[in-house]
Length: 395
Image (tube, rainbow, N blue to C red):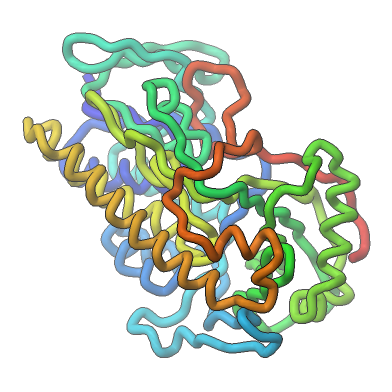
């Protein structure tokens, strides 16, 4: 019998598997690599100790990710302000090849002794006197495994937590409209660039594959089911920026554009009898902090300690994990409001007015774009709903 089955083979799920194997626990990771290109590509400098603890730092350095020397932002004024990572104790940040980063963690989880089934899906689960019986679909066949505890690491889908009765408390309806661009000229500016605009904010950063990503963070337009109209809207708002527009001048859209939910929420409760949620499956915060991957890694670290205590018979372990998660979430919400209040140029605009008021992560109903609409009992994978936008057109 396995100790833990982790549903989801993304950053949080694979990092958790590595930590659990270090404690001698038997682990199965059930996942499905995302069909679409992952959004979320910045790793801050202070993630280095976490990767070192996982034992992947040396391999990470050889994987071809792009060093990011700092952040430049036009926030609160038209002028660019720079924050250089040279002043941090951990050196540069990184612009990731996310697919490669995810594969590295999955490979390291296997090397640590975890079973990693990808592609696979956890299709059903049943409580037993010793924990759980889970059904898994993989390679066209089905298998049944027994375990003591299950973990939801399905990202924004929160598929397992929903199945087990947890509810999502959402604070906003933020979405990310992302386009990847290529240019014949190779630039040398590897910084993360942020720019506030009346209807939200943009970020752009170069990537290791010689493209760069430009993402419009905004509240949803009236319609999300008109891809071509949304692509035109993205172009129109890109043209109204100052610094982002200059950075991508002469570039060409390549591949698909994507719309992803990026709203702030928490799952309540984030754990139950012999189960817990980790990473974005438990809570997600505004991408403004560029801390999504970092939070997935720290969440995995905390969850591993709690799971080990729980399986040793400590009745307070999962409660302590939830308390730690909730405290961190509250602190980040306070920092989020402070950051948004630094931008006062468009305080009368709906986007900014909503973010300048007190919030408790519970005043806004969940947006349909953030729901799991696949209609299965439990699905392993990165989670999230994407609307593909066609086109290979000049900006």
